Length: 487
Ligand code: NDP
Image (tube, rainbow, N blue to C red; front, side):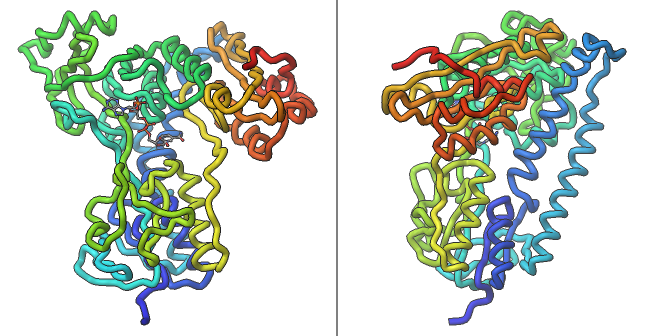
């Protein structure tokens, strides 16, 4: 049987684009369908614009500290419109780069929605049909709202980059990566931020000591973090002639400590775009915010893909079920990235895409190693992590914990109370470093490098053989002499 293509990729995000390009470089005839912007979540509405916002949000403290360091700096203010114009121009540029890379690889691009019609057949939204020997689904995921009254009045992370203006007072619901990162970004940009997290400590799944320090630092920087608190309902804030919500004035002021008139500009509620809303919380309080951001998780994009009809099994969380080689139950159909809900990280999706090409087009069956993946949460300070948390390691075997927390030189000089944490979780018998957890400015950069040693199975003594780079924060990782505790 002859096919139109050797490979048809559905989804033009990081994973899909990489797989398409690398397969085409192997001589495969490749097409890719993407009905939104090329680049996907990471480039268009995730990692990249988020990181640029992280940079933007850091300048306020830099300016403040610069004065203490002897610079004549006058107080400035942040211009969201100026920043977002530049941000959008940068995203346009990056999208263009993605397009050029695909075109240069002779990948045919369809700016259309694709749907499976049969194991080798795809129907596009212009009603044309294409056949392919292999189909790769790389459709990613999307943010979800909780199932509560008025949820449609909140925004999700996709909407953040399109806000016409920054809200004066933002409520963030959730305690994961996205919630904590945007709490810090918005706080840095001068927005009053309240965060509700339903559990006892934010960043569930990360090392307890590390996440506690991040939570403490976030509060120290002025984020109103309410633990064991969730949202019950949202409703549009009702306006009086003076533009304030009389029913909730007292409570809003009480909850945030901010004058209510400052919280309530005369805006009209605007579903999905934010707008003043009244929020009831599980702690019995009720308050008004200019916008509510739901950062309550993401779900795989498996809707309207024809998966059920063709017979591709979907798991309980809506994910496409694949084996170690990213192959579904139908031999011609593979899936990579967030749509498979394995590890929702861009570099993992890219690796899965490369492994797919190795397996299918290079005759070299390759599994993706999902163990010991370093990652970073871009809070202020950042949290970088690899391997086991202290809690996980204790369950597995006797451990020694090497840990130090201190005020780093740069911000201590400026009189800030900021603290950092450097922590190694070590196997007592084998001496292997089982986990490394860093809370510090640039912890993302640090963990990338420390992660190589941990991934290679370095022992604590091998860490110690490395001479410290002085004066740095991360030198502590090679100078921790005495275990703080063991078990
Ligand atoms: P997460 O799964 O990390 O966090 C979701 C948060 O929402 C959790 O705190 C969860 O609470 C809470 N939650 C879930 N449902 C509800 C509900 N009904 N009511 C209240 N709270 C709720 O998801 P994110 O959306 O933050 O991020 C998705 C993924 O994207 C991450 O897991 C990560 O893999 C990736 N990502 C990575 C980044 C990076 O590498 N820096 C940055 C951003 C995203 P609970 O803990 O109790 O379940």
